[in-house]
Image 1 (cartoon, rainbow, N blue to C red):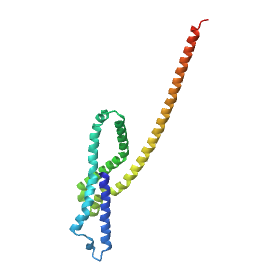
Image 2 (image 1 turned 90 degrees about the vertical axis):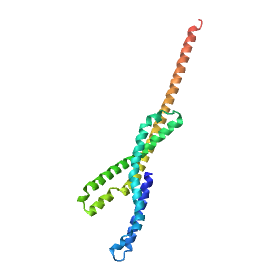
Image 3 (image 1 turned 180 degrees about the vertical axis):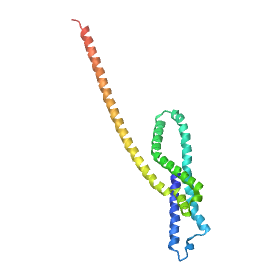
Image 4 (image 1 turned 60 degrees about the horizontal axis):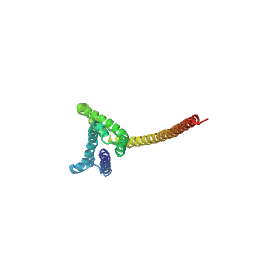
Length: 207
């Protein structure tokens, strides 16, 4: 939902800027002609603002979900110990590792958003009009966020892939070493039993 709202906001933002550029290019002479009427503004800005607020609010619900999931983790880990549920737990852990950069980016995004909005609310009287709207647009910084988020996710996915390959190689080497150790131990036990049996037969043999 968070990514859907983010990309939908970007598409609506592109539509808003494209409309503004189109109106500017068709400007005849009066600068006031670039202003759209109320209905057009409402039609253009509604998806823009709607998806912006959805993007800003969905991390809050994700944090709430993670709180309940963390509290119920011990209970879920104790329910069922078969192979299928263990595999699901391991896949969930891997998914959480993959989602970690997304959660970090959303945390940074929310902290910056609330700080700038707090600054605007309490110091708006001391800001010029241009500065006020600049801070207002900067408080969302969704385009920058949408650019860096896929990069962080791609880097994290490659790191997890390399980590899984290394763990698999280590597991294969460990299992191989244990296998040969078990063969050696079994061979030594059989050899010891053979030597012990041979010595007993020699002792019990009549002279």
